[in-house]
Amino acid sequence: MFSARILRFAALAVALGAVALSALAEVPEAARQAIEAGLKRHLSGEKIVAVLATPLDDIYQVRLEGSRFIYANGAGTHMIAGELYSFGGSELVNLSDRERASIRQRGLRKLNVDDAIVFAPKSRPKAILNVFTDVDCGYCRLFHQQVPALVEQGVEVRYLAFPRSGPDSSGHAKLVTAWCADDPQKTLTALKNDEAVEINICKDNPVDAQYALGAEFGVRGTPSLVLMDGTMIPGYKPVEELLVLLGL
Image (cartoon, rainbow, N blue to C red; front, side, top):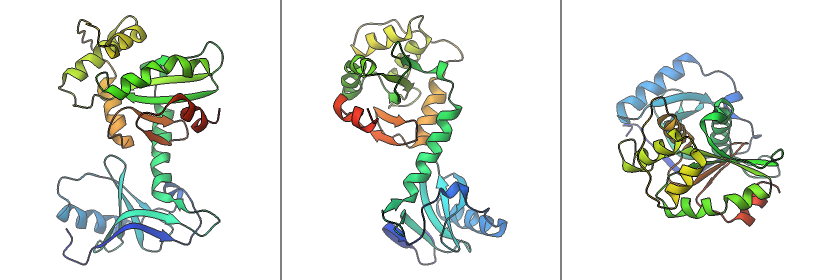
C-alpha cells in the first residue's frame, strides 16, 4: 500500500448534491498520471479502468475492474477505500452505487438482445429483468421455476451466461450448449432440471462476452438480477418481491 498515510473508511459522506460522477468535469492530466503512477506502485495486478472527478475538490474516483472503486487525491499520495455519499439533500445518496448503476445501464444499452435467452410475454412487456445465470447453482434453478409466473405478470426475462467456475469449467460448457442449441429455452430448462444434454460447443457463441460483462457489472454470484436502470439485485428473490422491485 501507499508509503504515505492511507485513510480507510467504511463510508465517506459529503454534503454535496448527488450527481453521476461520469458526468462531472474532466480530470486534469497531471492528476490522472500521478494517481495511476502511485496506484501501480502499490496495487500491483489491479487494472485501472478509469479516473473520474467527484464533487470533492482534489478527490478522484478510481474505477478498478469489476466496478470496484477507490478514491485518491490529485497528487497520488493518499487514497480512501469505501463508499462516497451525498447527504446535502433530503436523502442519503450512495454516489458509488449510482456510478455502478450507470455503468450497468450503459452496458445493457449496448447488449444485443438476440444474444440473450429470452422468456417473454406474448404482449408488450411491462418490465424487463436481466438475469446472470449458471445452470448448476440451486438458486438459479429455483429462480427458473418461477419464470413462467413472472412472464404471466408481464415480465420479460433475459438470461445472460455467467459460469461461476470460469471459462474452463463444465458449467461453462453447459451454458455454451444452451446458447448453441436450436431451442435455447428448452435446452436451458433441461440443463437447469439436471437432465442429460449432449454438450455442443459452437463457434461465435456469446457466453465469454456475457461472462466478461457480468464481471464488469460486479457480479459475484448467481443468480444476479439487473434492472434496466442499472440496479443490481444479488441472489434469489421470490416473485412477489420481484414484482414490487419492478414496480408492478
